[in-house]
Amino acid sequence: MSALLWALIALPLGAGTVLGLGGRRVNAVAPLAATAVAAVTLGLAVAAALARPGVEAPLFAGVRAGLRVDGLSAVMVVTVAAVTTAVLVFSTAEFGRGENRGRFFGVMLLFAGAMLVTVTATTLPLLLMAWELMGATSWALIGYWWRQPHRAGAADTAFLTTRTADLGLYLAAGAAMAGGVGSLRLDALPHTGGAWLHVVSAGVVAAALGKSAQLPFSFWLSRAMEGPSPVSALLHSATMVAAGAYLLLRLHPLLTATDWAGPLVAWTGAVSALVLGVVAVAQRDLKQLLAASTSAQLGFMVLAAGSRGVAAGTVQLVAHAAVKSGLFLAAGAWLTVLGTKQLPALRGAVRGHPLVGAAFAVGALTLAGLPPLSLWAAKDEVLAAARAESPGLYAVGLAAGVVSAVYSVKALWYVTRPLPAGPAAGHGAEPAAGHGAAQHGTGHLARWAHLPLWVLAAAAAVLGFLALPGPADWLRTLLGARGEPSPHPWEAGVSALAALGAAVATWWWLSRTPRTAPAAAPWAEGWLHLERAAHALLVRPVMGLARALAAFDDRVVDGAVRQLARGGSALSRLAGRVDDGGLDAAVGAVASGARRLGSWARRPQTGLLHQYYAQAVVGFALLTLIVLLVR
Image (cartoon, rainbow, N blue to C red):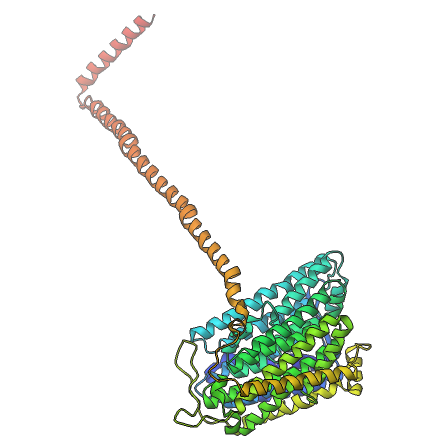
């Protein structure tokens, strides 16, 4: 059984590494090889979900690396593998030979492998390793077209924002060790001793909310839309942004171990679902609308995790993965074919490309929460868990469900409008956000690219069966969440009527609003200006402090070093003058005197015997005189 689990994670990681290192040299085989690997991984995921294998290996002293497929991870590995396969099949038509397909498909498989490790890890160190790899590969995928500065900047923003929140996991690991959880097993974190339990909870909550683009971290998801559409379909549906919600669902016992973590998470999710839903309503760019709706829909999963609705959050996660990946792929198809993702310019898109349009329509109606489609049933499960916690949570969640119908119908209304008659009819090029050249549509989409769209649309429509009484009981048993509340019939009726009413009202209002009407809420269209606030409150002060420290280093520290060097040079010059004018002169004088003495001493050495006798007589006379005087 352990070999099955090792193969599940090793296959995408190994194949992704080979393709990524091969780069353009493997362009010809990369699409087929990657889709084949993804399909085999899906088969392994299904087998692992049925067999539930587990494996452990030593990692550090007293800490083991553990992998296990239990009830929750069984659902997640199948979801991740299925969405990855569908996205890679679509990507074979999206990326031509002019692109570095080896790098793209390789990094996509690496990302999927990291996500599979994340959802099967049973110990915090291994989870951290996969979490880091997931962040690094997401940066590479969002900035895939790195030669365009605005795309590279968007990847940096997404990476740094999530990376800042990710520090919470390191904080949690350190606090768990200090609190006596030496093994760092995830299921042991709720047993952290003393006040360290609150530190662990705070770190996990911060990391999860940042990864799932919840308030106040949500702005990074807007910037991430600069990446290719298949990247958005994978990262922002079932994998990266869902990882935070998964972590909260996995560690729901940790949230209940403190008095504040569960309510904080629940209210953050509810408010994010409502406020970011309003942000989605204000968008005129289809990918931005889908991005904001992703944050809003993830808010429902976070709400479920904070309300102890593990099964409800899981159903919402799985259904949303199918819905949002299909919608992102449809948006990418229109961007490829028509060259635009601006909603006013997408008029007639459904009529011109009915196969893509039909799949998009199914996804949009599901996202709106209309019965009997999957997210209607999934949201009712979440709202039932919220109602059991607080009527206020239920009211905010219900309002967020109404808003989801508004932004979903808005997107559908634009793409189903007929093209205007006249010489201006047609679709324009997509501006490149002030950088680079405009993107023009190819007017063609490969036939096989429709297959994953329709598979995802079908899954989006029918996955709501998991919320039906029989399957819901089976899922709760699978997840070990028996006893969670189920929605009453009146709750299902209220949510259905609210969604239908909001959908009809939105369609009616859009049909009577001038297309040239200015944006009603620029603050919402600008994602609450959270990125600007982050720059004002964090980036600029930090950069200002860095510049001040650099100036201090240049003027004070380096200045002192330079002055010390100048003083040393001056001292050396003085020492040189003293040496040359004093010591060397004294040595020279001694040498000169010695030479003179030597010259004088050589004069008596004539070699004549009578002079030597005379010198001896003089010497004896001097000695005799000295002896007489001394006495």
